[in-house]
Length: 224
Image (cartoon, rainbow, N blue to C red; front, side, top):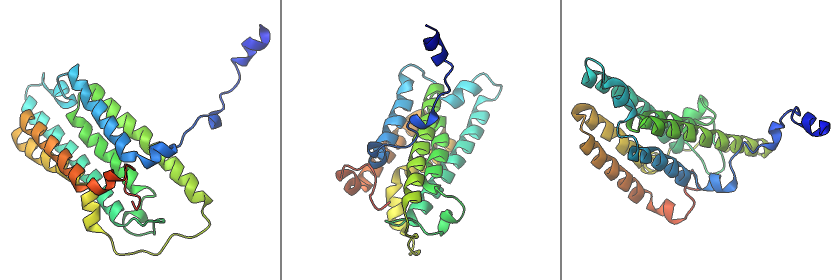
């Protein structure tokens, strides 16, 4: 019995815990992101108020405070979308050169995804916000760990910079652009029904814009 009791005091070997994305996670990043978003917004089945309204509805001026907080969330969405679009525009198939946002951030697209998730979470219930931000944070962390391990194993330098592919970048981030426009409209109307319609429309337009990507069943563009 004593040896077994002593084993409980053995330090946890963190190196044995997988902290980087699996092949499936890496090849299906978009799919996993969509599952996280879906799980976050399914919380509406049990919680009817979004996180912003939950905390402002009992204030003396709930609508003004709600509009102010959603304005901040819109800035997060805009910043996240802008970072992701710029990162995709300057990304190369084999690696990235130190141009565009890569001058300042090592993994700008993943950082942009996380910033965007914080803004998008404002539309979800409290626990939906937690699921979205925590889920995206964990996903981004694991993908970054995998990419860092891969880059350390490469002996060749990154390719030279090329002209940014803005058209392709905007197409790949069409959903984020649509969500940003949705938030602009919502700021003026504060109408949940209009927001729901625009959110659904943005999602469908994004899927159509990226149909060639999804048809390859990879979840992400191999060149991104």
